Length: 281
Image 1 (tube, rainbow, N blue to C red):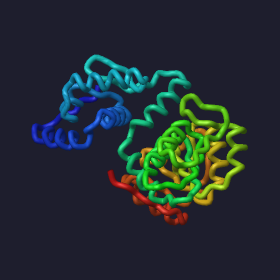
Image 2: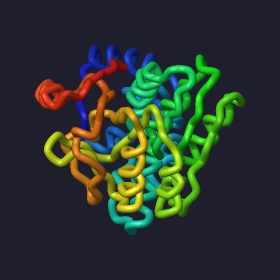
Image 3: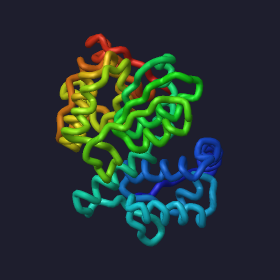
Image 4: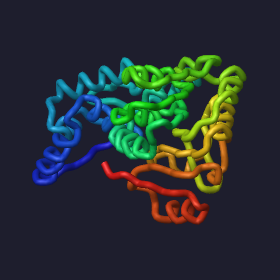
């Protein structure tokens, strides 16, 4: 298990920072999962010091994450969950994405919502970052929201003033999204002003991709029905390629991501005439 060493001064400084930043259980658990993603293991005592909470609280966090099948508990901490079936892996990835980099996703969602205008018809895909866009529509009173995400539909209905359309189709249990020929046929009935597209993987060379062939096919039709395509994803998705190809970067009008976007990638996107917007957390 990876060991981290702290001086008294660095611990005190880091504790204060983390108490300010991780002031919620969700934020703290997101950080724990991010640490697992980077180091493959975490230690209860070290996490307690770093986040300025008791070891009892950390153990509760690890228990909850274990119950969600996001990690494996071991004596004194936890390790990354890897030996799982393909179906479990897909489920784990969806839940993992909801928590990891949650603060970045929230900031990206707020920035993306600023691109919307009253009267717009917006299309929202099933990505967890795209869901954050729907959570930031408080100032609007006239929108049509079309989505293949059950989660996005539920969020949109909470406003009680928008026209909300959930696309039909086969439901993917892991992501609560509708995909397949029926969803794609439904999409062809609409013209949309803006598509907010969250992706699992993005690179300038290989474009946008996702592990699900069905999701990729539905995303391709979404792109064809939108006047403007806005890709929303945190920087952990950069320079990766998944199984199923969605589109080349040239299909995107705007990229909204966090400020860890490398300068080289920013310049490449701008050279392709893609608007780039970064947010700070």
